[in-house]
Amino acid sequence: MEKKNIDWANLGFCYVQTDYRFVSNYKNGAWDEGVLTEDANVVMNECACVLQYAQTIFEGMKAYTTADGRIVTFRPDLNGERMEQSAKRLEMPVFPKDKFVEAVLKTIRANEAYVPPYGSGATLYVRPYMFGINSVIGVKPADEYQFRVFTTPVGPYFKGGVKPLTIRISDFDRAAPNGTGHIKAGLNYAMSLHAIMDAHKQGYDENMYLDAATRTKVEETGGANFLFVTKDGKVVTPKSESILPSITRRSLMQVAKEYLGLEAEEREVYVDELKDFAECGLCGTAAVISPVGKVVDHGKEICFPSGMDQMGPVTRKLYETLTGIQMGTIKAPLGWVVEA
Ligand code: PLP
Ligand code: COI
Image (cartoon, rainbow, N blue to C red; front, side, top):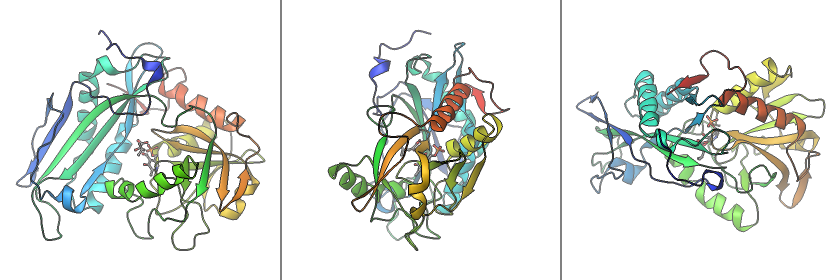
């Protein structure tokens, strides 16, 4: 397979149109077979439910070229499961997990020429999504839906690659208790746009959102979960009902315990404890593990001992082990790495 002529090493996290996408339609209570198409545009009525009431959910995954030249993806069954949960919460029909995985693999295979080579530092980002497409003017769910999967080659999510980030504690809330923070709904990202633009304007890379009820506990950022390392080398991640259950984070907790022999704990993390941690990172499909050097709490700087030049040592080990598993240089737990 001849690869496209792309400058893989200099890709940012931007949309590049690839050749094929998968489309399946839900009508009269059933999903059709679905097809691959070269048409990247979606045509819908002006009153489509997604346009008026934001009835849309999505997933994010990556395809990798392994050291021995296979094309693989990471734990797609978990993305399929999470999309089922997201659909139920927004009163959308479930696109079954098995069909989800099949559609993802098929779309990756069709765009093989865009899967960046091993060692290039880039990956093929895969975006499954679903939205209410028929016209709805009273507030109610749509009856017709479209499920699609597109791919786009990407580089690092944060400019500067592995340079530690500076983040601020946000005065805006991301999710309410009993709200939609735990699902991957477009609406969670729409509400974060003002906060992220404002953070960038003030010179910060990202927002640290707190729990909306007490504003004392760490939740997550707009697009990634937090990982902390204590001074005695334990990995800690915030437990909350209103954050997205990150597949990267769940995998890293297992990697910490089973591959690195570290203690790893999911528990409530208080803002007051931040000063006591040795390392901090953001984890997610797009972020992989991006180190955080500094958190700013209303002008007060909390600097992690790992500093502003490089990843902390435990964060680095986690990063290297996870990416080694994903790229096939480290043996993966059963079912984690799936060939396209
Ligand atoms: N949190 C939010 C809000 C996200 O958008 C994402 C990205 O998917 C994550 C966390 C990380 O989740 P995952 O590791 O499953 O990609
Ligand atoms: C991902 O990591 O896949 C995400 O969806 C995060 C971001 C691009 C919104």
